[in-house]
Image (cartoon, rainbow, N blue to C red; front, top):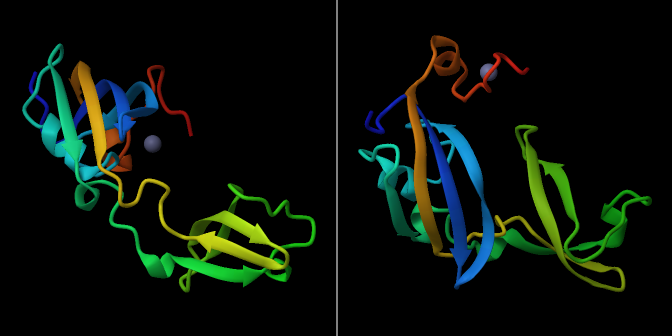
Length: 156
Ligand code: ZN
């Protein structure tokens, strides 16, 4: 069975950025629903179980370009008093529509806190090494939900 729209695909992958392994594991996903990065989804189209592929995904088809305006300096007082505001900490604020918006603390100097709204991998070229371990047809329920359900049925 060939990977195409609405197939449930299981991949074993290694993600490297600048030669360093950032992530690896096994992941089932629903093909054609943009639940994995665009450049990787495109590279998998048409493959079958047992095949592997290496692909270099540019930022435009990965986590986007780095936006300099996503970096801001705010005051320690903008955080809740009990929050642990240290470099690397992640917080959530809300965008103008009330959706959760993640941000990372990238520096703390006295009362000045530098925050970054960019995805940690924005601007990076993503080097994927992928083995397709399984391909199957999605169930009607999975298609309705837009994601994969584990064996044994509905988990949520
Ligand atoms: Zn579901």
